[in-house]
Length: 247
Image (cartoon, rainbow, N blue to C red; front, top):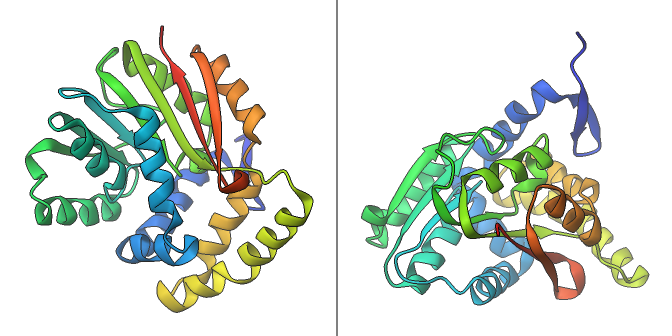
C-alpha cells in the first residue's frame, strides 16, 4: 500500500515523513524560536497573540489545551488573563517544550502548566477534557489539519471554544507582492544569521503559502463539527484568528 503524499513547504513528501521533518525544523530552531518571532514580525506577533486573548476572554478556573504550544507563549498569556486556571501545552518537539519549561520556571508559572509531547492528530486525552483549545502558528505544520480539528472537537467539552491563530492570505495584490518579497528574500536570511538555520525558515515561509485561505480554513472548521465559526484578519490578512464553538 503506497503512502499518501503531502506538502512540506513546496516539496511533496510521503505523509509518513512530514511529522519527522517538522520535528526536525523546530528541534533545530527551538532555542532561537522566540527571538526569531520578534525579528521576523518586528514584534507584531505579540499584538496578534494579545488580540487572540482579547477575543478568547479567558475566565478563572478554565483548563486550556494549547496544541503546538512549544515555548508557552499562549499558555502564559491565558493564565495571566484568567487569573487562575490550568494549561496543558502539547507539542511534537521535546526541545520546544524544554524551552517553555525554562520560561515557566522563570515566570513562576510551573505549577499551572503541564508539558506533553504528543501529536495534534492523536491527542492523548479523554473526550470532553478541556474548556478551551488553542493552536497558534501550528496547524499548517500538521500533516492532516482536518484530523487535528476533529481531535480538537473530541477533547473539548460541550460549550468549549476553539481558537486558531495562523498566518493567512493577504487579499491585496500590491501588499501581497511586498509581503512575498520580504518573506522569501529576507526571512530565510534572518534565519541564517539569528538561528543559524536558513532551510527551516525557508520551509516555514513556504508552508504559509500552502495553507488554505481564510474562507477555506473556516469551512474546514465547520466540517469538523464546530458552530458559530468566525474569523478576523490581523495586519491586513498576514495573520488570521479563527473561532468556533462546540455546541
